[in-house]
Image (cartoon, rainbow, N blue to C red; front, side):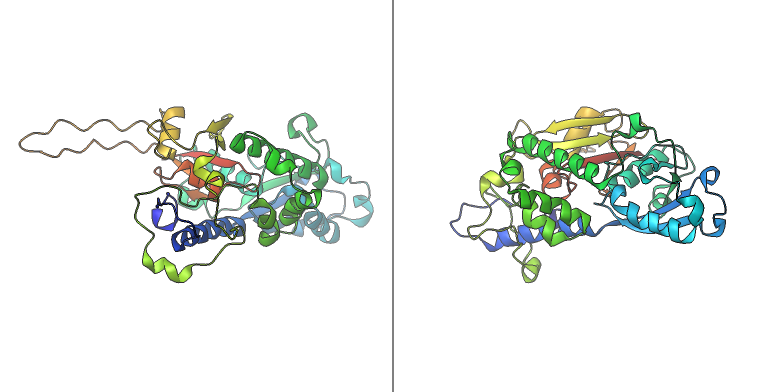
Length: 366
């Protein structure tokens, strides 16, 4: 994937914004756009035990292709309109209170209001990987089946109310936390005008890529090249060069680069396990980029064991190779199965969530 900017391209310092910089930033914008445009299928069914009297049970299921970067509270008006107009009896529905609605999967897993929809889907995918009958390919095309409950929410586990305003506050808090982890302070976020801070949430709410990244580009690291001695991108990419909105006239500053942040904000999700929040330096001790392989071997070596050394050379095998490492698990980031050589800094610059966090989900291979 390095052809598309998953690794750094080093170059000699230059005064002007070079074509190589432009190609790299084109690829950054491309991956951000692909992530933004990603959707997941949801199937929402009201708990049959909670359906109001005289409801139309032939239309009790609602299907939607939901944006990965969005949140369930932002879908609630559309979901509510469907059930109120087509399913619930008008008289019986008057007693329903939106703030008491909540979701769980058909397996009984409680759905968090403040998790992005794409993360909810990926987390369900890796949990399903524990089932022997589930293959990765089939899980990717199956709608996430959610049960909508109309009363008695477990508020102690949901953490916040289903209102868009509560979700916005949680989202802004995540952005500021990610900002601090990356740069050592929240000055970039708190330095934004209130109008711009609100614009970040409006971009999510309206699903408007340009509105969101017009502001987010001021706080998100670039993946522009910063060092020397690496081949340039292939010339075939030159025809695709397009300056992204985040590029200033002088080109990206080195101090704003993804490889120069203090740490990358990462959350590691294990199937039916705890969420591990981590601060991941972009470089290893020898000043080379830290990869997913480095990170996962350090944190969960039982699933991602280190590669053993190659055996000593012999007459029959003068150039021995290390024995293969068993593939016990796989990595999902934004619904994509990531190669282990992917650099963590690149993930932070291109595939982080809209809240600034890189969500790394671990599934188990059959």
